[in-house]
Length: 154
Image (cartoon, rainbow, N blue to C red; front, side):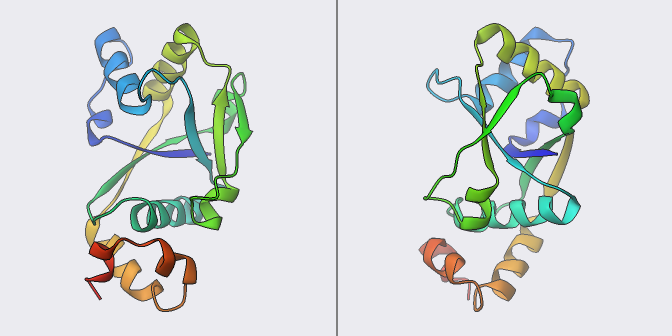
């Protein structure tokens, strides 16, 4: 499956409403760049690991995070290409993909289909902070990448 953080409002957006589709597009496309990235997850445990590492090593402060999950077979006609990102925790970098070849028309279709078939998964702040405290002592990459705000929680 494909996983990425989205705004909590995705839970309320309707795939039949062009304005809602545009709101969803605006939440995942930045500064007119049509690059959309996802993480590849093989199972629910991988989704939880992605949510944890994203929340702890990319985001600067704890908060409940909302993730969109897409079934890979429903998006086979879109080209997902692995693009390692050295700025990410190695676990995330290895699973980082970009959707290539998007233009305004097929981005609209991609997001419409995501709203129609995707699932929203919420990773609660309490779980995020608990896992951070448990994992921090043994994961050197979390130690390197966690913000000072996270580190003050210890």
